[in-house]
Amino acid sequence: MALFLQKALLRNTSRRSVLMLKDWNSSRERNKGRQLSTEAGSCSKLAGKVAVITGAASGIGRATASEFIRNGARVVIADVQRQLGEETAKELGPNAAFISCDVTQESEISAAIDFAISEHGRLDIMYNNAGISGSVVFSITDLDLSEFDKIMNINVRGVVAGIKHAARVMIPRRTGCILCTASITGIMGGLSPHAYSISKFATAGVVKSAASELCKYGIRVNCISPFAIPTPFSTDPMSVLYPGLDESGVVEIIQGAGVLKGANCEPVDIAKAAVYLASDDAKYVSGHNLVVDGGFTVFKSIQFPPPDQMK
Ligand SMILES: NC(=O)c1ccc[n+]([C@@H]2O[C@H](COP(=O)([O-])OP(=O)(O)OC[C@H]3O[C@@H](n4cnc5c(N)ncnc54)[C@H](O)[C@@H]3O)[C@@H](O)[C@H]2O)c1
View 1 (cartoon, rainbow, N blue to C red):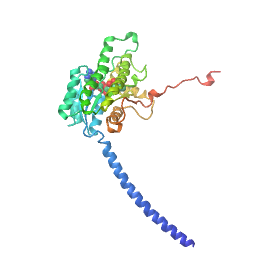
View 2 (view 1 turned 45 degrees about the vertical axis):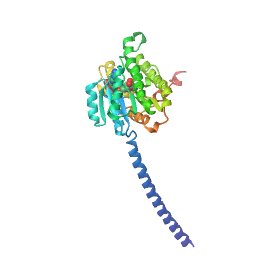
View 3 (view 1 turned 60 degrees about the horizontal axis):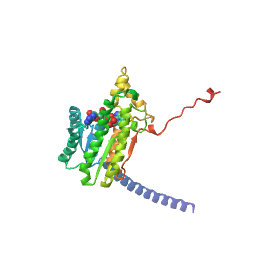
View 4 (view 1 turned 180 degrees about the vertical axis):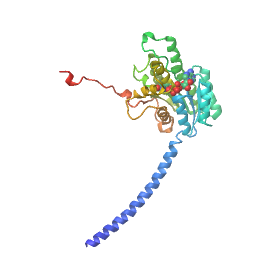
């Protein structure tokens, strides 16, 4: 009896083992398929799409152009820096093209959009990313209003012009995705000089206003608010603030300001957020401000004195 039970157990166990092995093999095949399709998917989230990215000669825009291309898109780099823009386009390969564009000139934004249409026959994604930080002046009493106008002209008016001309070609197609780079300085006051901060509060507002109208044409409008990232945009003014520091010292200060330990905010983090928003994965996301800040703007720590010091 005991032997029978043992044999039955063995038979069952080995049958179970065979079944398990079969299951394991077929699940391995399934997983392999899933893995392959995920890998293929992750590299083709923007297959066939055409994007214009302003300010893509450098930093976040450049990283986004690279990530868009890696995901199957063709990208027009629209930037005021001609030489750097041409070099970037060359480095990014045949799916990148450069057009000289100053976002303060409406005709140049319009021409960048028309260039995408004439080169590729369509525009799926417009990323209004170009921006400047301005000088490091912290008191509103010292605010130079002509510099304020310059910052608003590039960071806000340039974005509005980009949305206007993207909408011009997207509305007839009843589809499209518009992205803008805002900032955490447009979520909380006090994180940067006033002019820049005000321009980024405005950017997030422009996105909501445009999204309210363009939704009826199937066009999604979103922005991304990055934490501080060491690009020329941030390292140049920081070098003015800390003239004694070399580049790595400046980078360390910028990255050290983050609250999420074990990771730093990099251009590629914004690029990946942009791929998500531009892809069909975000097909029902519009009017959103995707904050990429490691949690920096979601809390403030309160410091009470230690109890033993209050006796
Ligand atoms: N780096 C950061 O810490 C940080 C944080 C939050 C938001 N941002 C925003 O990210 C965006 C990109 O900045 P970045 O960090 O990549 O800086 P960056 O300096 O590396 O790149 C900015 C690009 O914009 C271009 N540009 C500037 N003025 C222009 C104009 N009038 N017309 C066309 N192009 C113009 C520049 O030539 C440059 O290529 C900006 O809107 C900035 O406000 C940056």
